[in-house]
Length: 464
Ligand code: NAD
Image (cartoon, rainbow, N blue to C red; front, side):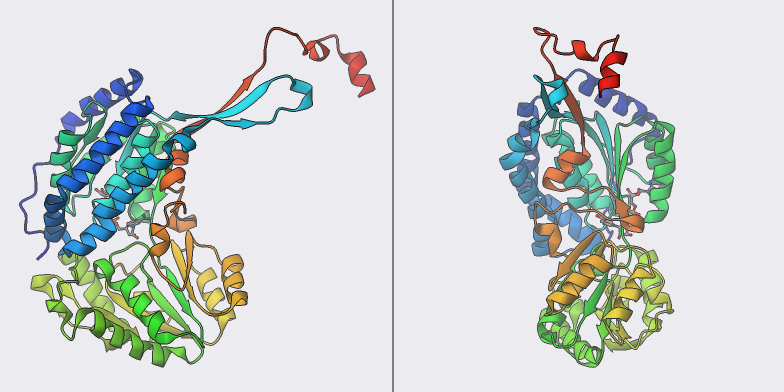
C-alpha cells in the first residue's frame, strides 16, 4: 500500500538560502566546469543507482506500489541508460562548433562554444520520482552546472531516499537536495537561479514562471495534458489494444505521456474495447488487484478524483476500486461523450475512455480544438494518415504504433508545446537546455583588413 513510510524531516526554509549560496559559491569557484568533474559525478550517480537499487525500489514500492521490474525499466535503469549515453557522447556534444565567416570579415574564425548556466533548480513530481529528479540532473551536471533537486512531497519515501543518498555519492558542494512541499518550493523560488527546470502540472507551472520573472530566470516546463490515441479502421486491433493497455496501465496510468483517451474512428470502437478487455486480462489476470505487475494510486485525493471519473461512460472493462489499498482496476470506458468530466481534464490514472468519431477529419478537428497535448499516438497502416497527423496536429511528441516509447529513444528531445510545456531535454537536448551557447568571433590583430570599414567611408558607401 502506498505512502506507509514515515516521511523524512523536511529541509528547514532557513537552511535554503545558505544551501543555494554554497552552490553558487562552488559554481563561481569553477569547480563544476572541468569535464573530468562532470564525468566523475555522472559515474558516481550511476554507482548510486546500481548500488542502492534495492533502496530505491523499496521507496518506489512504498510511494506508488511500483513493481520492482517496472521501477527498474522506467526509472532506475532508465537513468542509468541516460548516464551511459551521456558519458559516451559528452565530448562530441561539448566540442565547439566551427561556423563559416562572411568574406567581409575574413580572415577570421567563428565558433559556437557551450558554457554552463550556473546554479540550476530542478523541481520534480511524484509519478516517476527517481527518473524525473535524476534525468534532468544528469543533463545539469553534464553541462557543468551546480544543481538543487527538489523532489515531490507526494512521494515522501523516494524524496527521503534521494535526500539521504545524493550527498553520500555526489559532490555536496555543488549538488543538493531540498525536501518539502509548497512552503519549501516557495522559499526556493525566492532565490536566484540561472535556470529552473520544472516538471508537474500547468497550474503550478504558472506560479513557477511568475517567480522566475523576478530574477529573469529562463525555465523549462515539462507539463502534461490529454494525450490522444487515434485508431483507424483496418489496423490489427489486438496488437493495438495490447500496446495501448501497456502504455496506459504502466504505473497505474500515472504517466505524463500515457494515452489519455482513444479516438476510435468509424466502427473500430466495439472491437477495440473487446480487445482492450482481453489485453488487460492477459497482462494482469482476472483480478489485477492481485497482480504483482500492477501499481497503486499515489494518495486518497487522486483516488477520489479518479473514482468520480468512472461515471463518465459505460464500464466495459475493470471499474473496481478499493480505497483502503488505493486500488483502481485497469478500466476501459465505452460510449464516452466529448463533454463528460473524464474528457475535461488530464486523467492521470488507469481509466481509458473510448470516444467514437466518424472519420480522420473529425479526429484531427477534435485534437485541434483542445490544448496541445504532450504526445499524440496514431494507430494506422496508412502513410497518408501518418503524414496528416504529423502536419495537421501539434503535440510535444508523436508516436505511430506504440505509445510512450519515444521517451526511450535517447536522441529524441522530450518536451511539450503550448499548454504541455516549453523546452526539452534528454541527451544532447539536455546540454542545450542547461548550457548557454556563446558565439565567438576570433580575428587576428596582425593584419588590419578592417580599414575599409572605418570612417571616412561615405565615398565607399556611394559605390556600394
Ligand atoms: P506534484 O504535486 O508532485 O508537483 C510537482 C512539484 O511542484 C513538486 O515538487 C511540488 O512540491 C511542487 N509544487 C507544488 N505546488 C507548488 C507551488 N505552489 N509552488 C512551487 N512548487 C510547487 O506533481 P503534479 O503536478 O501533480 O504532477 C503531475 C502532473 O505533471 C501531470 O499533469 C503530469 O502530466 C505532469 N508530468 C509531466 C511530465 C513531463 O515530463 N512532461 C512528467 C511527469 C508528470
